[in-house]
Length: 250
Ligand code: SAH
Image (cartoon, rainbow, N blue to C red; front, side, top):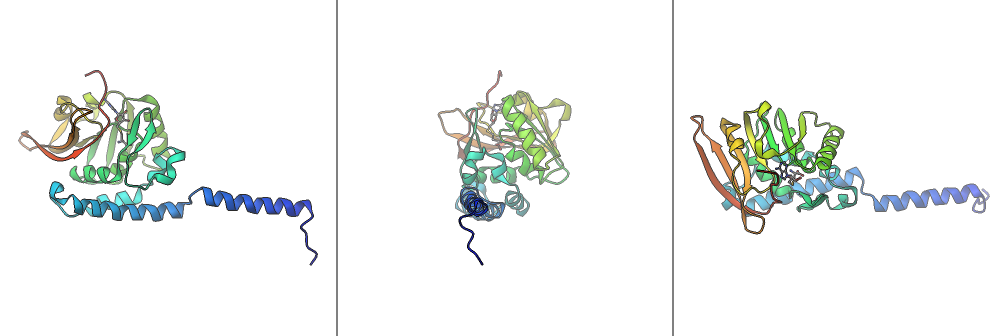
């Protein structure tokens, strides 16, 4: 067969091949993301074993780990950070905010003891990732974000990922979401100086809340709040953490 290398068609063909090869090297495919996500689950399992003294357990609820293995974290981070999405780190999401470290998302979710019939409130939607993990595990998630563009973006992402049991509201989560209260569980993903009384009020008897408490420059503690069926509230410091501050007018 006559070599075609001088024809224009052939040059086009070569540049097409080069283009495909170079984009394959630059962008990570879904399969590679799946592989990285599975590896991240192993890293979280190890971190849980390493911190078992704090957590009082050697392993998290398998349902929680399944959700961590399922939710595509790379979709929730800005495009230029996708190749870092499955490192066990927080990442910037714009507006001075961060998507939490996957290990932290996993343990906070586990502490809530999520069940398929639960209604959960999240304060601090951020990227929407924590809401998506919860959405895999409970009936309905209500999440509040104070920075409008973040809340809007999270709403769009959650629609794209098909998590249609999540409702996002723009507002100050300090006051909770009265219309949908009481909640079986509440998770706050920004550090507060104190536990907001409206959130305690909006927690169901028998419910659990997880919240980082402390100021910006001091060690914060992840606190588990439990409300007994008689309405008695107890708190337990679980482990030191670092979160962005809970803002707003309170
Ligand atoms: N859960 C998020 C991480 C969010 S970081 C995720 O999975 O990506 C904390 C978020 O809390 C930030 O987006 C910040 O804007 C928001 N936030 C801070 N104070 C708030 C308040 N009073 N009400 C609602 N959201 C708040």
